[in-house]
Image 1 (cartoon, rainbow, N blue to C red):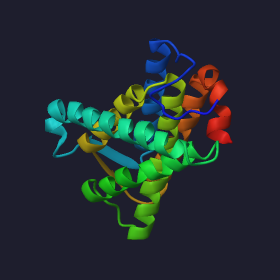
Image 2: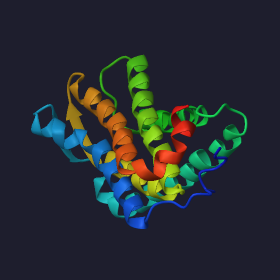
Image 3: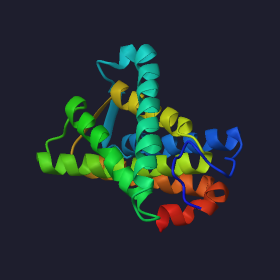
Length: 202
């Protein structure tokens, strides 16, 4: 069965509790690199200058993420799903959907001392991994809302946290966490995702 939009599904999605659990696991794994890096003494974490504004910034981040997920994992996927071969739409949308967040994080988040090409490559790798997890969330729940809320929470932490680190360990941990979050979603939503494995993996 070919899916033309993450908003419309013939097979009902999982219970709301499972959808919430999958979104929570996604956000937790994606952000786990922060406490891991701190515990290993590779990073210091505190509140950024924007941290005091989290009361309104977090809901705003969630709202923007919900709109973005509806556009990317909803409308864009629907458009490309009609044109691309089965199995290609989800990874292509994961990559295309990573371009804007990668550019945004380079523009507004603190940068390390690495060359611009390395910073851009790292940002794109992280956002593509998260994008694949968001694609699996949308497929497995039949909605872009769980992914939008989780992605908004991730961005709220990014904006509110001040992370100080040196070297490549923390960026590597963040990249691994992003891709691990997609794997975690695939495990949590294994049963509802089963009919769509061909759509995702070809």
